[in-house]
Amino acid sequence: MIFDRVKPLDAILATAAKKSLHRTLGAWQLMLFGIGCIIGTGIFVLTAAGAQKAGPGLMLAFVIAGLVCVVAALCYAEIAAMIPVAGSAYTYSYATMGEFLAWTVGWALVLEYAIAASAVSVGWSGYFAGTILNEFLGIELPQWLAAGPLVLGGEPGGFINLPALVIALLVTWLLMIGTSESAKVNAVLVAIKVAALTAFIGLTLTSAYFDPDQFNPFLPAGVFGGFGSGVGAVGAAATIFFAYVGFDAVSTAAEETKNPQRNVPIGLVGSLLFCTLFYILVAAGAIGTIGGQPIMGPNGVPFPAGSEELARQCAMAEYSAALVCSDEALAHVLRQIGFSGIGNMLGIAAFLALPSVILVLLFAQTRIFFVMSRDGLLPEGLSKVHPKWKTPYVVTAITGVIVAIGAAFLPVGQLADIANAGTLYAFLMVAVAVMLLRKTSPDRKRDFRTPMLWLVGPATIFGCAFLFLNLPLEAMLVLPIWSVIGVVIYFGYSRGNSHLGRGIVEVVDDIEGVEHAFPIDTPESRD
Image (cartoon, rainbow, N blue to C red):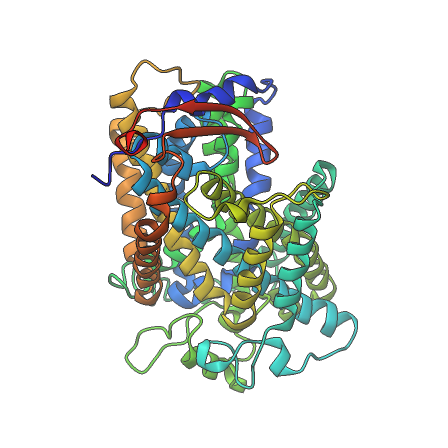
């Protein structure tokens, strides 16, 4: 049986019990923490891609994605508070649905975090080339160094996105040598991001350029463009789901929250509602001033975001100033309406803040890889810790190179869609795990219980599956292809080398040592 290996929950929880955290966070603190984690890459980078899919309907897309995030977050919060150890959805699945399904979740998370880091690197590159090099230094980066090749959805004359490649490798190096974010520096970056977007909203919504007629037609591609089309308000929601995924950091803080049953939902839902409203106002300001209608193909359907066809259209003079063609959408809008200086400041805010997001994504990806290697599902050499830096440098280096290659040659819209495919699958599996644990371990201590799980759980599964099916077909296909590769690796290597299959469950408190070893009795261990 391939579903026979379930990691003992007692073994996993032993680590959490040994290192319980002090409860200090209230609802307001948790909400602010959530806002800081959520507002970032998506809104700075994906506004143009979302507008190409839905036009002014991008505003509705933010609402749809936000609603799916709310129900997913409530499921995530219960299991994160119950199993507060490394590994995220991978560990949760291991403890509830067994090793094989846990492997598929971990494998999907590896894809999610790596591709997301590539997407952020590409987004950073747009602001670096447009604001820092062009606006401040007067340097025009040669086209062949500024974008990926046209055939992959880059730009005419493009060959490699050098800034994206460099920032990905630089952050990887910082992560390898153990440089971590300072909480104070991160707080400053959060303040810069929020201040920049607040200024954007104020300047655009009160601008003389703001024209309500820019919102007509509101849904040029409709609400639902069809499964696999990636267009319409729902298709845009599937893409800009990327703009919300920082909420999982809020749910994992449940262990440190005072009165979690009250404060966790307030923090989660409050931060998501605030960010949704913020995003809608940003979209309204951008579209109301310079327009956000998609560039339509000959069949009356928007050209796919990140496609060669759209890149050709954007190279034409009539579309060069369009929102959907900008690599630095928000700064571009402010320059178009006469606020070049403030637009440049917003560009600097993105330039400063986005590398920290790349670092967090790479950190999360390498730790998932690390935990899977530590469990024996991947070669244990990958989890080798550097004697001086005390970091899993092997897996970090491998991940960083892959991220850099993706950033160098692929456009941000395609990367975000692929990352979302892995994210949506992982969140769906978390909802399944929560419902299974309610049945199999009803008496276990839960610091936070998802309200109305009978409704919230199925709503999460349906919402994540629905958004997945509304990704572009190419992005949808990446996940099953990636999963097939993973299944081959699992049965070819991982199942035979799994620590759990060999009869030992190791619970590790950190990346430097094993604290507890739980021998277990399995058919394989008796052979």
